Image (cartoon, rainbow, N blue to C red):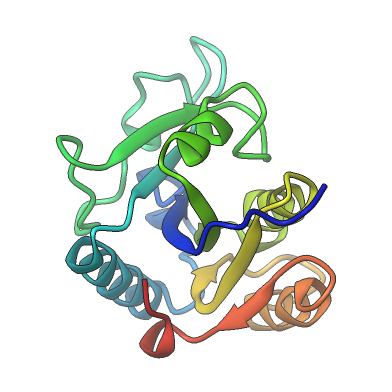
Length: 180
């Protein structure tokens, strides 16, 4: 599929929700990542760029049921339900079972800046999916995070994904340099 001819940019915030962000262990450099995402939200708003925020939920009765406090967007994230598109997903790929692809087309978006949690799961999966849809993806390398695992420190997971995704699936950008 050819890349979209549109130069319009949008921001996609992946799973910045209470259960992940306020979990134990906490995300790597969570406060810095949240500040960077809020800076990007402010820039997107100033430029009139669309903002989409995904919330990952599970089945009713699970800890991440759609009505669970754990799936609510984290306090301090400057997403506004009245002006931004907040949507629920149930898969790591932000496009599966959601209307995200349709919204991007309706908003004439050609480039999607991706931020959020968790690097090795939903951020990675969504970055790979954007490429398959013919859109340009930019992974904001200092605005996604995860937690330590038994095998790797979060810092290493983030660095690995920045290197692995860069080129074949995304371009990389720093929060301070990205413009909408």
